[in-house]
Length: 109
Image (cartoon, rainbow, N blue to C red):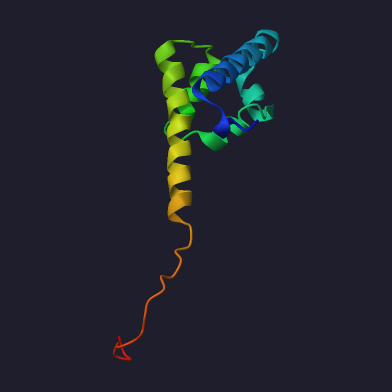
């Protein structure tokens, strides 16, 4: 399931699983630059995180920082982005023309 549709608990679980996977990989191959160049693990996260939050996310994952405040900040950022996207979708719906009576109106109104 796409990250933008997960609830807070599932997002946090996915984030912790990602941290586990990255930590295991970096224990075997500690070259962070090579890992960042070759991995696609962060792609779906980059798509749902704000530009401001993404570097925090990367640093937290690479350093396996599991502080509750950091995890909550990342998850909240995704949830807030979803709210913004949903509200912009609602605002982008075409407005239906209202029926109105033309009886008795001036032709240039």
